[in-house]
Length: 86
Image 1: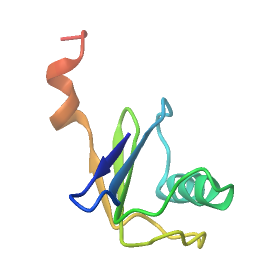
Image 2: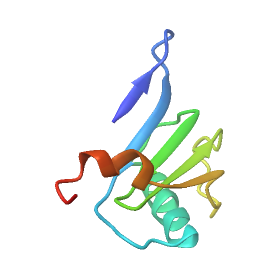
Image 3: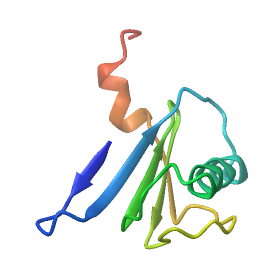
Image 4: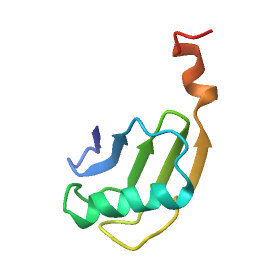
């Protein structure tokens, strides 16, 4: 998913994957691999949305350096209300 700003430049890219239990390092490798293969354009924010974690990078551009996310958050708080399992 891509979010554009008023100037039509990408502000945020979101990649959703069905991978549980990804460590910070694995998430960083996933981001690096997508950028190193030219799969993503430049954006101010990149969010890797996994079933159990959100990883967010800010202002890393097209860098393919292995960098851990700037922010990490458990998804329970946001996704539990939408889960079919109560």
